Image (tube, rainbow, N blue to C red; front, side, top):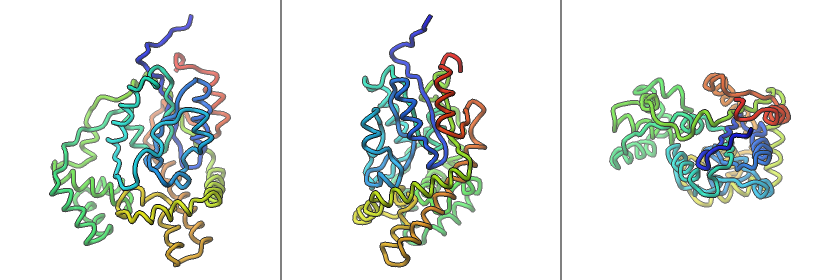
Length: 315
């Protein structure tokens, strides 16, 4: 006997893994099997303009299955995890979504953590504190900002990239305004957005040598398709360098070429190296932060076979 779920409930499938692992294709294939929809869980793929550089599904892929929360944020917006979670909350109340399987796909670990564990309700930051740290960054540079954060919140500083100005600004603002570290706020118990019992969680992690080859091939392909033109378009907007979109891998490297400092070949190689390093950091995070309920697969085919042979009632 088949047990039907209530119309208000959504089965949730979470798919994560390092960049270039094939998550998007896996998400589309699974969504097609279960008449579901794909929802973006990548903090760079939310933005307009850098469609190729951030690895967003192409037009044909998005036409085959409903996709949501891709390329819906202007590049001049600093879109936080809280903003994303609020967008997901609204989306899950959409009549087009209710009752359908939602396949979340992305490599942003904090998005998945907030989805399953909720997000701390940090009090609003006053304008004076916000402007104080933004001015400090403009006058003293990102290295000085990281030094200050390391002195005041060494644990959090170790978790952040020294080049992640936006998150460092946020950390110092919260510390100044509340007297507590963001890390402390994140440890608070809060209500999750989705029912963990209605989820299946998949990690797509190809063997390292294969992943490195995928990364190299993908970057060559997006260059051929026009990634350089995307960077030109972004640069023409003259955005604040501290904005998240300016940290997308490839922007700095291709900008250095456009400024005439290096060759295109050198810029491409530097971007590939940066992507490979990012993938390694993602793999480390996946190994240490995900619990045993996440199923790990080395290929799309093995993940699809496992998905086809089981159901939510068996997990």
